[in-house]
Structures are given as structure tokens and as C-alpha cells.
Length: 144
Image (cartoon, rainbow, N blue to C red; front, top):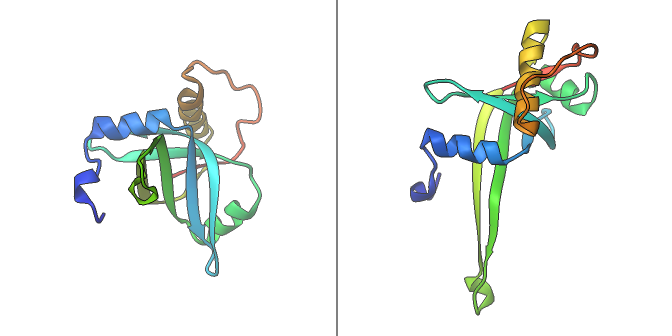
């Protein structure tokens, strides 16, 4: 990062930024082109600060095709947007908080892990944790 004074390293601040944002942008490369897609997500963070981001998606599509062959991803989230006004155009600015990380997409196949992943997504998106899954739990999940 070029401006080290703006780098977010405090785990509580990182958690706060992730908690505020409901959509993650996932970048991937198919060997020829870069592809970026916005996805709803959930997450958990371990004691060392490692963040696991869970992404819910369909079983088929361009991103699935890419990730099967090229599982490396870049994830970006941003929020806290605020225009900084000024008298002159070049003095305007923009405040925002963003997190960018690299990881490897892993397809979750185990049913119990799928339930856990979906619980993390639903908790993040709705704040509710006590969901019941009757069917469709075998939809594909990824985690990074």
C-alpha cells in the first residue's frame, strides 16, 4: 500500500468495515480476461485475524467455470462513502473505507459446512442466526 498511514490494521476496525458492507466484489482471472462480480457474503474471523469470507452463488455460470480452473481471487469491499467538497475542482476529495485481500476459492461440499457457511451469510446480511434449512442446502458455496 502506497499510503501506509491510511492502512487499516486494527482487527476491530477491519471487522467494523466488513460488518457495514453487504456486497463484496470478487475478482478472478480466466487466463485471458479479468472478471469481477459483486456477491453477497458472510464472514468469520479467527483469533489471529484471518478472515474467511463465504460467498453464496449458483452452481453454474462463468465464475464457477473460472474458479474451477483458476481458484485465486481478489476480494474488495468498500463503504463509508463521503464526498469532500471544496471551492476548486482539484481540491475535492472522497472519503471511503475499503478492504482488499487475496485468497483461494474453495467449493464447500459437506452439508454441515454448507449450513455453517449459509448461517454466516445470513447472519451478516440479516443479523438473524437461527435459520432452518429444509431444502436447497446443497446449493454451491465458496469460501476464501
